[in-house]
Amino acid sequence: MNQHKKIILIGPGYTEDMKNAGGVTVLFEQMLEDLRESDVDFLAINSNKSAHGGSAKTFFVVMKTFLTNIRHYDHVSIHGTANHYIMIAPFVIFFAKLFGKSVSLRKFAGNFDDIYEKGGVVKKALIRYVLRNADLSFFETKYLVAYFKKFNPNTFWFPNVRRRPQDTAPKSDFRHRFVYISHLKDEKGTPELLEACKRLDDRFDVTIYGPVHEAKYTPEYIAQYNTRYEGALTPHEVVEKLKEADVLVLPSHREGYPGIVIEAYAAGRPVLVTDLPAIAEIVEEGKTGVLVEPKNVDALVEGFYKFTEENYPQMSQNAYAAFAQFDSMPQTEKFLERIEGLR
Image (cartoon, rainbow, N blue to C red; front, top):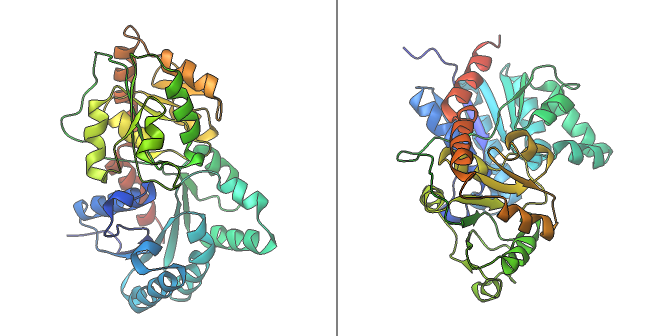
């Protein structure tokens, strides 16, 4: 017999264009898959504005569906980015409390402390209201848990998670094959990556995948930099491209726990990434990957050369083992236990 509370989940689900599915969408859909396997009775409300044709229509659809169904559920769980916390969560929490329902929040990505600190009076007030009136609050990074506990002591860590795909394992041979899988835009470090590729010797093979967000990044433009662009991938194609490569490279300027890093670990692939606060929580220098200074092409080039035939097999083993703390189902089970513990 199903003993779980009945849950409404509000979060950014899939749209028809799977190749533009972002990390937060993959993360929310993974939660729904876990809940199905756990025999949880739930209703998922898609808050992805791309699914509804804009922010205003999305708000209307979400609130209408939520208010129509709230009486039939025990708990409401809001999953999203900063915009969800500011635009949707205040209204959802108000009506959930009006109907006597408990509420949990799960914040995707990092830098929410920066958003709060730089926010105006209204934005700060909305964030405080949301956090203080939630029964449970979950953040992706440990530094955000520590920062926001002052608003709600029931604040916990819920990292970016994935399932380990079948037929993945550590690898012992290193062939200088690097792969970038992310959005193509300046914030993701695409300019630094291209410039670094231009300086690498002929042993290196770097392939770039992902949706193009800035028009300058055409295949012809990218080909000038001793690398190649091979289009966007669906979530299900990502693991195959990781298995073909030796190392994931992601020189972002801003990140939480990048889902692609977790997927690389699941496949036993170490990473070359920027030394950002959140990433430094999950990447061990010289063990599961190499950390380099953001926006520093020289450091990125040096990072490529730190992977060798001698150190690679152990780094691959370490990356494969590091995935355990990001395995989706154990984290979802902890999430459900905390919800069940609410009165």
